[in-house]
Length: 81
Image (tube, rainbow, N blue to C red; front, side):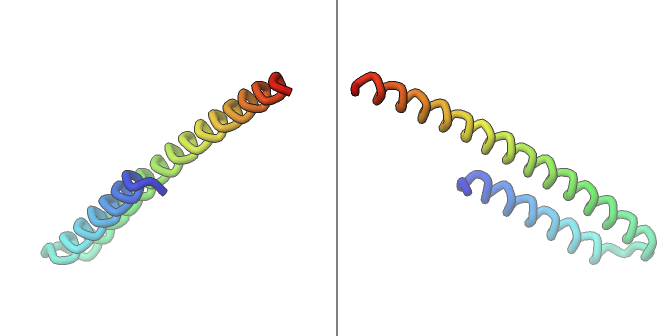
């Protein structure tokens, strides 16, 4: 995993933890706090899903590029023999 991906995941987890701690320490009614936590969790899951999809697209693109390069190299080698 690239350093930038690790950084983004770490930043997302840290933001989620900070938001949860902040909400737990805030003086609010239980139902209001539960709703906020639920909404934040749904938002984080959505962001994580987007991050996973971006990772899948990047991996697919790298795979396609690798296959093209292997095919090109194979063709060049066959031309030499």
